[in-house]
Amino acid sequence: MTQSAEKKGDFVVGYYAGNRATGALAVVSRKSGKTETQVLPTTPESGFEAEYKPIFVGLTRDQRAVLLDPASKKINVQANFPADAFPAHIYEDPGSTRRWFMNDGDKQTGNDRLNCGDAGSSVTIIDAVDSADASYLKTVCVGRGHHQAAYTFPTTRAPEVPRRAYISNLKDGTLSVIGNDPAQPADFLRLLDTIDLCEADKEEGGKSGVPNNSFPHGLVYSPHTGRLYNLNNGYGNIAVIDPRTNKIESRLGFKGNSNLFMVPGGRYIIGRGADRKSDPAHVVATLTVLDLESMQIVDRMALPDIYVSKYYFNPTGTRLYLTTGSSGSPEQQANLKADALLVIDLTTLPKLVLRRELRLGSPSGSLAFAGGVVLSSNGENGALVVIDAESDEIVERIAAVGQPLPHSRVWTLG
Image (tube, rainbow, N blue to C red):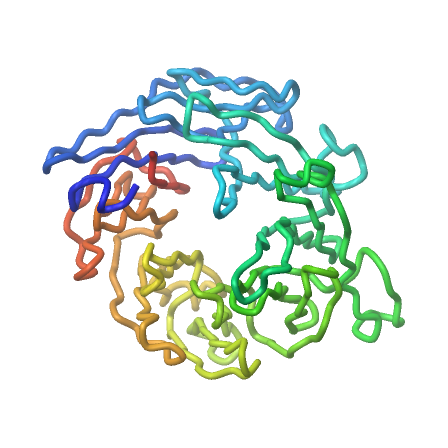
């Protein structure tokens, strides 16, 4: 939903809040200055083991939950919300209506025992998630560990790049390559390749193979260069990958960063890091700008008493929003501004400029953009915070699910 589709300040969003065991679901809407919150009725907990709990995948605009049965793979669209439905970790597939849900597997082994046995964990692809027409497409087994996703596609500057999905596997130290072009049915949603990120000279005893200590976390695709950039946290470098061949072309030292953000347009990568060692009383967040044309670091920003949690770009790609959280020693956490929301100006790149630091009252769960406003879910306050997208000022706080819950998520419907 964009401002062209609705009046400035009008929006319809889904809002989930929970405590990692149970949760509640609501639709929050505003039209012509009138705000309404509809909390879906909940049903008791299912009592199923974790891998069999219903998976919450979407919400229709007429206040119905879209749920996936993990065993039968049946999609259910219903008016009530199971209290222990699992809110899946989702990645949006740009240029399509498909959404990819990451399953990190069980904590002990990293395996998705239901779908992959002892062979790894999985990703599940569903089409039209926020609709009564939602459909299950496929579950694909990948490597073990926490996953991130990036999607490659052809561009004017890189016309030969195939449409594929790349999934990073933290525990294994690999990237899984999955076909993502419906026009290529033989490869579509099929595991095509596995990229081993191991660097033997950085492993104990010079061992090679999988698993390894590359610990990939930070995977982005640049339409500007037609290359993938994968941050190997364990090695402190970025592996540059050609998606036409799935070969690692080069590596660049990038220590001190724990994630990567691809700036819209694809010329610049921003690395996120946190310095917890220099000062025993303060955590310092760091942002590092890498110019992909020169492969040089062109700017750095230090943010005292900040730990960056999540990142969001506005629809025009002119601002970067950073939510914050807690990390570090008890002494460091006592000084952290864990309820801050930072607004970074991207029109000044390669120079980073902090436009605004807002204090929300509690950490933001996530952000959404609609109708000329920025919406922040703040579960600990049971609120949806509305921010003017032009002035960066808080204009309203809306009661969302009616009770404080530590984890929350907001997303635009429609």
